[in-house]
Amino acid sequence: MPINPSSAFAAVVFSAVFVCGTALALPQNDDNKISNHPSDLKAALKAAGMTSTTSDLPSAMANTKIAALDTTELKADAVQPTLAGDMAQGGLVIGQTRPGSIVKLDDIRVDVDDEGRFIFGFGRDHPDTAVLNITYGDGTILPPKVLKIASREFKEQRIDNLPSNKVDEFTPEELKKITEGTAKKNAARANMQQKADWVSGFDWPVTGTITGLFGSRRILNGVPRRPHSGVDVGAVEGTDVRAPADGVITLADPDMYFEGGLVFIDHGQGLESALMHMSRLDVVAGQRVTRGDIIGAVGATGRATGPHMHWSLKWKSRLLDAQLVAPEMPET
Image (cartoon, rainbow, N blue to C red; front, side, top):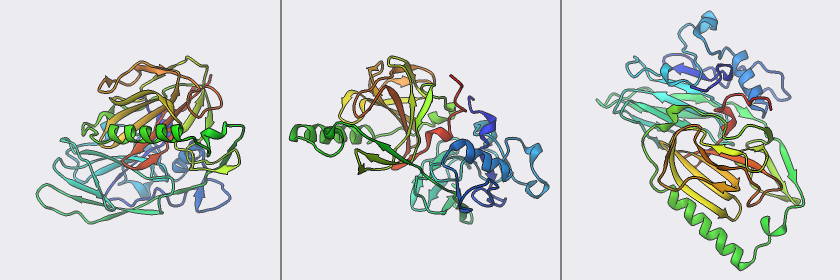
C-alpha cells in the first residue's frame, strides 16, 4: 500500500493500554495540544512510542501492536479486536474484529464488513475521549473501551478580495443554485456502499504545494466562516486529478456554486472523498474507480482565488484530515 511507514499510525490491541493521545513528547505551547501540522502530529505519535515496527517498541509496550495504516496488520483471527490509525481530532481509524460483530462508537453504529473490517473517525472538535463498544455475533459483549483523543491547534487563515456573492451576498437565483446543490449532495450520500474500498490505501490526488490546511479557521473578506473542510494543493490548471483511493463515483457535477467542478468518491462504510474546483471532469456518477485513475483536472471554479485542488475526507457526518492518511507530499 502507498502509505509511508514514517506516518507512524498506531494500531492498538484492545488488551493493551491506549497510549495515543497521552504523553505526546513534542515541544508545544500547550501541553494538552499538538501542532496543527500532520508531520508534527506523526512525530508526536512516534515520540510517544508509536512506531511502525514492533521491534522498536519499549518493553513497557511489549503487548501493544504498532503498525502503519496497513490492512495486512489487521487479522480476522486475532484473539482481540485491533485498531490502526490516528487517535486525534481529524484522525481516521481502521479496525478488525470478528465477522458478524456489532460495533458502536459512542452512539454511532459503525459498519462492519463480512471480514470484520470497519472504519471510523474523529471530527475537528471531537472531545478528548470516545467510547468503543463491540458485541460479537454470538452475543458476547466486550468491555467498553475509552479511547483517548489528542487535541490539536488550528490556525487562522484570512482570504480577502473574494467576490461578495461567494461569501455573504447572494441573489435569489444564486440562493436557488446553492439549495439545489445541497440537494444533489444529500442525494449522492443517501445510499453509500458497504464494501470496504478504503483497503486500497490512499495517495495524493494531486502533488504540489499545500496551500490550505484542514480545520483552519477561515476569515473570508473579513467575515468569519466555517473551518476549512479539507486540504488545498496548489497546482497548474489542467493538471490531472486522480482518485485518492478505490471507490464509486456518487456525484460528478461541473458547476456547483461554491465547489465548482465537484466529484464525490464513496470509499465504503461511510467514508467519502470530495475533490473540488476542477476545470474538467472525466467521470460520471455510478462509475467505479481505482486509486490513481484520472477523474478530472485542476481548476479554479467555484469559490477559488486561483487553481488548486481541494480534497475533503468525511466519515458519515464527520470531516477528517485527509493529509493524515496520505503519504508524505513528494517534493516538486
